[in-house]
Structure formats: structure tokens, C-alpha cells
Length: 164
View 1: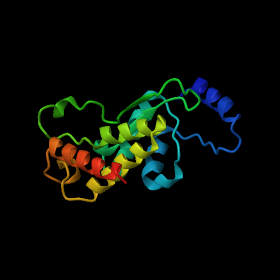
View 2: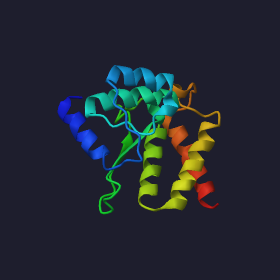
View 3: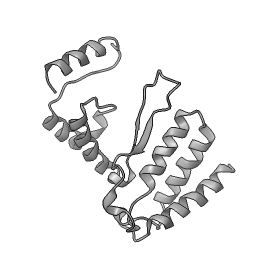
View 4: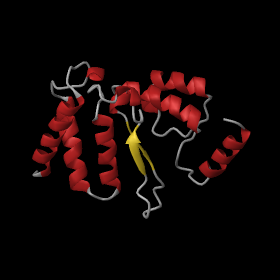
């Protein structure tokens, strides 16, 4: 990022003295993200570098198919935000039955949490955990299940956990 970005970041960061802030060039950040992922709680980056780093980071959690995303202002309670899979709509997978629905489901779960629907959020999270621990997985996670099969399994698991 250029000098304007860095000066704005430093100015805003000064308002949060308890938050440790480091500046890294994107190539160094990419390396550190793999070498020591626990070092990062939050990454603040422009769109291009942020997109590249988030795609890289998703591989640490299983790939783009399981990476949810949320963009919102924590102080703005009037606007829920934007919740979507990191991978976007994956148009190349349309109609193939190979798309992993977990990223979209987890994005939905994040939205439930943001809206204060804690029980529903917890039910979806437990359902996703259950599915990930099972044998019915999409090809990107080493399985052979189709999108609809995994989606149906998630729905049944949510229904069970929603009664908890």
C-alpha cells in the first residue's frame, strides 16, 4: 500500500493503543501468514492484497470452499452487512454438483450471529462441525459427495441441533 494508506492506517491505529499494529509488505505478509498464522488476528489491507492474502489464508483452514466472509461496521446496528463465501459465486462449478456449500452456510451463520440470533447461529455451527467430522464431503475436501447431498446433511443436522 502507498504512503496515503499507511498514514491513514497509523492515524486510525493511534485511537486504539491496546491493539498491536505492524506494517508488512504483502510478500512478507504472505510468507508470515504461512510460517506463523497464529500471529495474525486481523489483517487490514486494500482490496487487491487483501483478496490475495485471504485466498492464501483459506488454505490453512481447508480451502476456499470452507472460508466464510463478513464485511460490516461493528458500530452500525442498522445495517447487517455483507456475508458471502470468500470464493464468490464459483460460476465454473454451476451445475456440476461439485461446489462446497459450507462457506456459504458458515457465512449465513455469521449473519445470524450478527443479527443476535445466537441459538440459530449455534445450531448451524454445530451442524457444520458435525458434517466436517463425517464422511460425506465434497471433492475439494477429499470426498465424493455432491453439493446437494452435503446441503441436505447440513439441513438435517441443523434441525437436530436446533432442538438442543
